[in-house]
Image 1 (cartoon, rainbow, N blue to C red):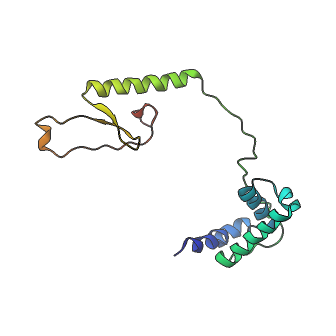
Image 2 (cartoon, one colour):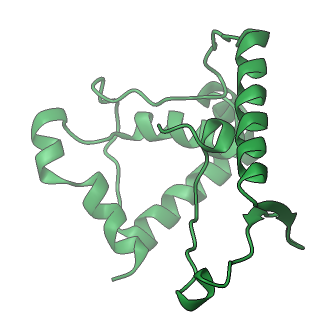
Length: 156
């Protein structure tokens, strides 16, 4: 199954269509204008080359994925234009950054006291290593890969 096989299933899903109807051409015009040109549809409509490219997108969607969109607009679908929408920025106070730095410093100190040393590989990955004692050399090594966390040790 190719990735193109799932696209018509997603857009033409009968369960979704029962409750919301299907995407229409105007809905797709708005979305594709933002996704490919970074402008609203009115701008694409007034620019000949963008409008031709939009027509080519529909040709590809029809020939490669078997998708056709009826004319009109389905008001139950509203595209999200993340680069157009106003965002209310919330800034973290300096204390948050100071607390994160303190936690990371504390974690680094604890690891150092426990005998670990920090290294950085050629690709920039930082890691901690502690040489095994004679008793530990008899056992298999223990590897722990961790994701992203504030300070590297705070549970989330």
